Amino acid sequence: MSSSDVSSWSRHGFEINTDKSRLDRESILKMLGATYWARDVSPENLWTSIQNSRAYGLYSPDGEQAGFGRMVTDMTRFAWMSDVYILPVHRGAGHGKWIVETMVGDPALASVHRIMLSTTDAHSLYERLGFLTIGDDGEARQLMQLKR
Image (cartoon, rainbow, N blue to C red; front, side):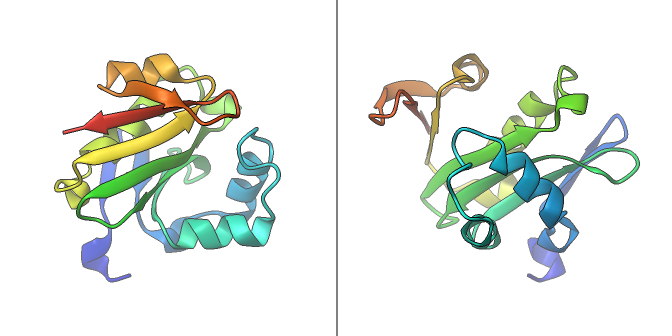
């Protein structure tokens, strides 16, 4: 990845950055390994999926990996938002909303006109950002879509 592919956003001492070399592999794999959506994915496959996506690391003021999200995308027309996670110690401060807003508003994805995701528990967060429920994925998760 060249430096021109890296984007960064800052707020209240926290930073969101797309530089994959900064990602804390151990922390991310531990965080995602505890989730309902990624617990059955091997660490190797999970890390490969992250490396092949546009990744967004959330870092605390001390540089700790505080959260994460990724977009599986062709960078022009379509994206699938996945693996959005905030460490419990950093929840309740709006970081989840901020990382999702940042991912949706990322200038590198400005031409993407359809963003989709699947969730069982964060419907209201995504609805506030314009996502609409379009069905379910057969596993009690709602499929959501943002068209722009």
